[in-house]
Amino acid sequence: MSTPVKSQLHLVLYRGFPVSNTYVWSPFVTKLEARLRFAKLQFRIDQGSMSKLPRGKLPYIEITHPNQDQPTNLSDTSLIIQRLIDDDVCPDLNESLSPVVRAQDAAIRALLEDKLAFYQPIQPLIGLLVYRGVTRTLYGQDTGRFSSEELAGFRRDVWGHVNALLSEARLTAPDIQTPFWVLGGKSPSEADATVFGFISSGLVAPDSKGVIMSFPVLVDYAKRIHNVYFEEYALWDEDA
Image (cartoon, rainbow, N blue to C red; front, side, top):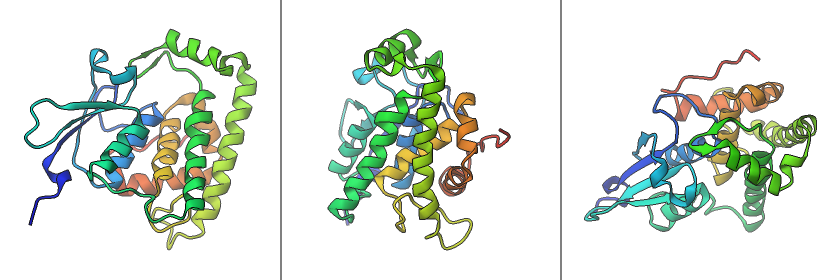
């Protein structure tokens, strides 16, 4: 019997933050780490280097396949996940979904990754990305033209939509400890890595924590996943 591909490769996740068992401010870092953990992949965490950033983006991963001399560096979480699926390293979590449910999954990811991400408060450093470059990008996309109060309202609207989805999904949970998933299924879809990444990163960012804590279902969703998949990580402080 051949050895599964995923047990043969060497995988390193570069987060852009000092290595520790704590959640970081970047939702995309935690999204990718959650996705790897959902697939039960073995990987190592490191901080990474600006000089090695593929596409100038964080997080990125380094993959070394058996009999491969030089590792492959990949960035962009969606492209990384698709590459791992294409290489049979991890399963496609959406494989069994109908086309309509796949579209719903994609819409949830877009709501957070393509909308909420640009409404978030800017940290002085987002991993290794420099503040000036980020602010210039946001202004070019019109996000930087809104007031702080307007952006806060947009963020609350997005979290309200996510809360509605998770409130219904929680009704499918068999008990008060087992994780429940955003589409209401028995296992995670691709959107769950994104939703968990944005909630958990928001709970360790002072400017986002308050609004997330105002939706108890969001915290319950994240805590259940934390207890199963990230149990060695420090849990966020729940004092608002």
